[in-house]
Image 1: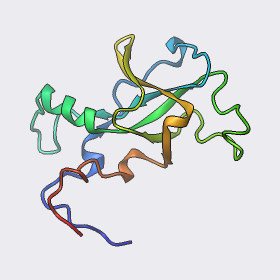
Image 2: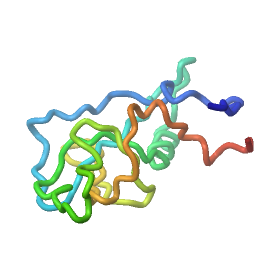
Image 3: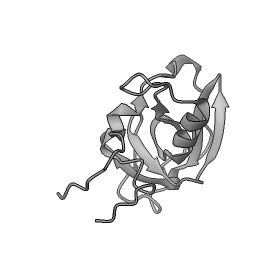
Image 4: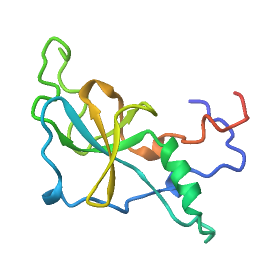
Length: 141
């Protein structure tokens, strides 16, 4: 695989954090074809100790379209005609979704995205494998 020079951009493991991990006892039950995803959180401080302003963190979070599946609705992926190969994702999987897909909500102070089961675009092993700056880069390979 060809590695694209990233210039001065930061690597993914430098901006993703595991804060806001929800307690499974307080998650809502989803009816129908919904999938509840917790977007990856953005670190408040860089590796060098620079504090990121809330506006920057919110902008980075808005551009982030990867999250962890925390709840599947009771009918999610049950339609055998629509999903002949089975579910596209399972609990605890990291998935990608469209930037404007789903309903962004806050439940008990934690950010979530409520998607339909067919709005999941792909499953990834870890959010660190994705480059959130791909659309901000001026380098063309």
